[in-house]
Image (cartoon, rainbow, N blue to C red; front, side, top):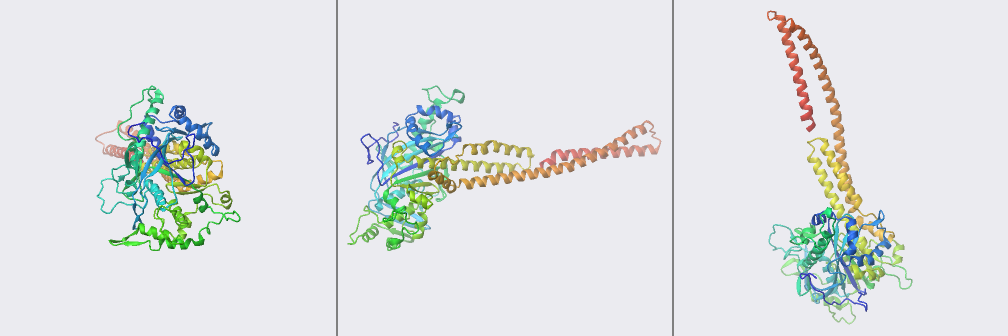
Length: 626
């Protein structure tokens, strides 16, 4: 293993007698997925990564054959992945192989966030204890030659308030909404990035990973893993490329380029919720196996075992519990009216109300049902300020993308939510998770929806950029000939347009349980909206260009009429020229009439020449540039 990577260590994840990971109640599986575009992969390899190259390479690379043999059948159970008799997407193993890695994650005991202009400070006993987290890493090769890199985490939690806030912070590391730069932060010459020594964003700086005797911020750990895995994969791919594509002989891989692969391959994009911060292009998949959460989100009547309507499931006592949660919680800071504090004393007061005897409970004790509802509503919307919700906000946030009919609710298979950066699933138990967890660290069915949606989203963004560039080029080229505009449209239609519709994934899922969710993700991620916008934009500019071409064609007809008329006049002058020749043969300088005839001829010929030359210059040089 690379010496810069943390070494393996034992963790608290349950392992059976055969060395396989057991999936148990109250366990969360997080997949952080980062996208490497086709262009960046091709630039790093010096050649486009085609499906045929990956197809022949996959069985030879580390544990990729094991990933394929174990997980592909599960993918194929629910989706028609075939294109022209082949599957063009591939799982690839990472440098660490199939063995899991166990790391220690630490967070501070005080969290500071800002919501709707109000700063909140939460001090919670037990929050900053060390937690063991399992890590698996792997790659996914997409149909168009793009790659995605996946870091899959598992954490076995409790329903304590401390763990609920810890789970919220894990989401905030990759999507730090509600966090902001401190007011006294020094001015920057560029946007902050997660790999900076310090960003000033608490959710990024203060969540640390300890492994192999090293402690570092979470994203620094991710970069170290990516750098090592990418260097190994790219070198292996280079050695496998055909000689015509610049490949090397086997056993003599090209030396990896100096510098960080993470900085070179992972695109950074502005994080609009935190102005001045750039985040890696990534998306999240959360998979909860938790019977308590599932029963709260899809409860049934104990007597009839029929699903309880979503609008009434929290009516009984929930409003009272919410009031108790917030009653006395908001304490203005003495130094500013913009701050409220949730100190350890608040949690003791709150939890003591949940017991008949009023005995205070530690923050590591079981959270009351109302708080669990508020946590779930906040987590689904990536909101750490989950106490600051009323019952209507909680109900809205617990409205899933699946199930959305009574028949689907009655099946009680799973419940799924999504926000702009994450898809979240809750189950009581999952056979597919149990099967694939030892390979990809999550449920393969949820992962396939997640990865296809992510690919489509970032492919659509690239397509949108190409369309905007086309519009800019055509507008900037408006002073030149229509031939140039036609060339731009042709290049777009045979380039980005063709590639987008060829490489974008359709809804390939066989069952409504996955197909419906994929369609909802297409809407939520803005894929359909952006695609419609691009089509309208390009069609409008193309229509305007054609209209201009038609108008110019009419002007051409008028101009040609003028030209033909001018040529007719010139023909008349030619006759005059012939007549002048006759006169010239009899010209007498002593005869004044001959002088008049000669002057008339010269004047007419010169006028005709000026008209024809002037029109020609205007038509071919000035008119076509208008």
